[in-house]
Image (cartoon, rainbow, N blue to C red):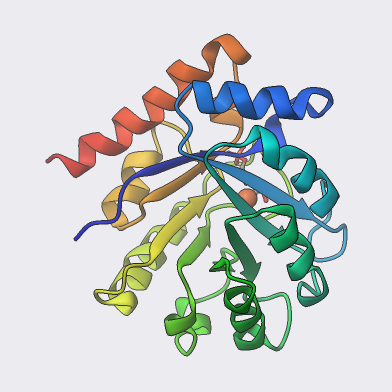
Length: 225
Ligand SMILES: O=C(CO)[C@H](O)[C@H](O)COP(=O)(O)O
Ligand SMILES: [Fe+2]
């Protein structure tokens, strides 16, 4: 059975002085999940937020809190994000030598486990952890910043991951440069969770609903053909 289509706005593009309000506005505008980008200035060349901010945001988030950890090492912080109330916790395959252990730890904390692949990382990097994942995040930009251009070379990787997963009930998420023009391409390749930052936030709060609806309609146009 196909996985449900999920639109997950990234609060990386939000007004940080009003994060709780921004999350409530995104959900009122039709967001299915809230994507929370964690950057450490080491694994990626930027800093964002930690578990304390996730915990503060959690009471404002009535949907699904999707934590994308762009940090190395990740293991010392998994419990903090679990306690903060993240629903899915995603670690990068490139972030350390013990991916299997990290995914086991996320599952042991009672959370959905995700694994992310940078644009240059092949799908074979996750071949031996498939039974430990609930979500595979195929990055469509090099992680670290919002507003970058979509990298089309990752499209065959989405399809390859869907084939590798066989019938497993695993989400395939794509993150980076997702907008109404790129959403149909990633959904046609097999993705079902679309992260979007700049394409949701452009135009300000009054445009959130139309921006989310435009991405959803573009994605659904492929699903119905
Ligand atoms: O993980 C990320 C960056 O590393 C963000 O989730 C992503 O870049 C979203 O921003 P945009 O839609 O503007 O590309
Ligand atoms: Fe992200």
